[in-house]
Length: 199
Picture 1: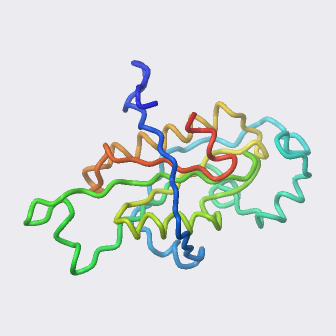
Picture 2: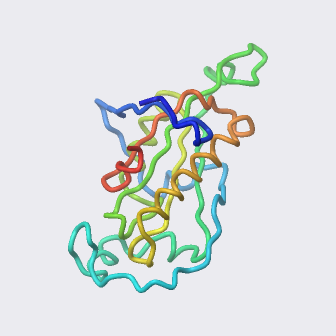
């Protein structure tokens, strides 16, 4: 880990396990209002491939999956684009001077990049567990980014999904200066099916 193939740019990040002894959670309605940057990192045409009737990972019908996730996939919300939400760390009067750009020449926060689960079949950036990770990261002064990807249920395959996640990472790192985070301090977190992308 931490060593990138020469063909990849920017370099891969060291893989770290995100452990929160005291797991706290923000509800979806609260955290979705906290982002200050929406980054469109990919535009695409709908797939012409007919998806299977059931998820190949966890055999359940599409109707069951959609009912469980209320149909809130990236394709349902935006049929031709993928977005990433960026949440800066909360600043208070006490810590505002610690971050980059301050008169005291402080440090830039690191960033936690979160990829949702859903069996690669459904899911979106509105995953309920995301609020837990974001609240924990914010309590340590870190920024957070939530990415999304195309899904099997919409006729895409694993190569598309991996490409989407890598493109999201590259788009985020390219904006490190603008978003004022330290691109050398990155933790990647995946929920369920979102975790294997990091391997």
